[in-house]
Image (cartoon, rainbow, N blue to C red; front, top):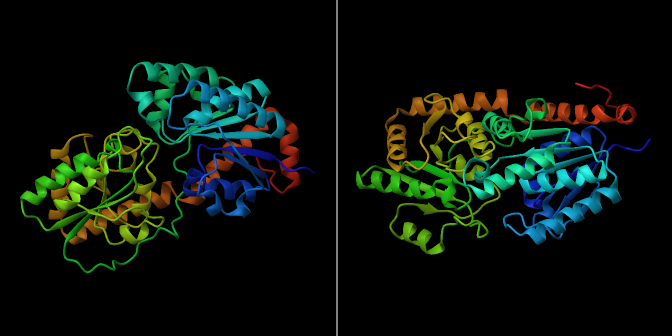
Length: 394
């Protein structure tokens, strides 16, 4: 019996490598044939070959650029791929693949799901672009089996804007944190300084300028701490921090810049508190989940996605986005806490990850979404699954 064929469509191999391993593992455990579809980048070679059966390179996607001609080419490319591959189910991740994949799946009669891992700035702000994306999403998503988001705010926004009805929307609490890989580790740094750690792209939307302003306030008070920055530039983003600005911060000793890394654990283990003062409308920030899994308290903002990560005062602190003074007060508060209180906050965060965001929990929910979507349209799909050892429809 032929395996159930899944087309997994992304805007980069980096996203697949960084975030989707639990989902790919789950589909392979279900005995499915998985075909990856994404632009080729340097992370393709890092994806475990046991997690997929084939790869199709897309050449036309401009993920962070508005280009009607390129978008039309991408739409036609996806349509061609769907017609040729004839998958039992297509999974479209992030906003552009989801919108153009939604149209392509309508035209080809393909059963499909959109996974919106964060609605981003355009759904919550702006004028023309927000209206355009909302209108296109309404049209593109109307025949999708399901639309999956990572937080309650994004779900509510899609309902309020009329993009989707509640019956089609599902929340996946996380894409899954490996709590064996990310676990509490003893510090290897013997410094007596209190360490704040920021991990993320060096863009203004992540609140990095507010972090520098807050650090400047605290440095002027003579407090014994350091602010570490780990991350890379994203030159395609209009709010990218310039190299000159970063060099100024380093020269004035507001931060220690540690560059990009493929293993954040070495930095998280030596930090006291992880800070993400994002203005950005996150899906569910992975770096905060990783920090919590390593029993570190967090400071983040009230923005959608971020605020779901914190029970204020229990596993961290919430501050208004864009408010450097409130951020400095939260950082000062953390430095003044007894060591035991900091440790207890970290333990509370670890418990939240284990009960809500672990790979085991999230893979189970993902499996339910996939099986329901397959079963909705074709009874023969259930028959196929039973032949490869998966018979339950949860």
